[in-house]
Image (cartoon, rainbow, N blue to C red):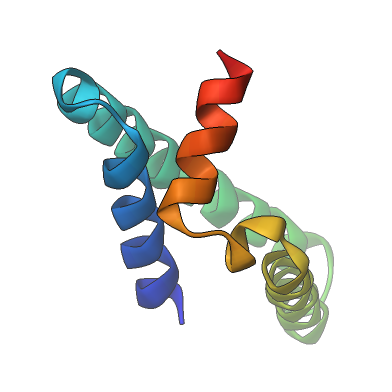
Length: 92
């Protein structure tokens, strides 16, 4: 599931980003995605230290569940590249 989300995010970014900005947008997207990993690992360690392992797994499962719900309800899920490009042009 995560791999499909990442691939779709990259594909959408490439479709709506002008050619001259592709490398910058790609680098920024990768930095934001990878930058959250240490924060999540540290937060998981703090929760595991303060509570039981079961509570830690329950917290992680709740986060995955919430992100799934937000992704499922997102208007971007139903948008195609032309819709996103039109919205981006309107925002400029």
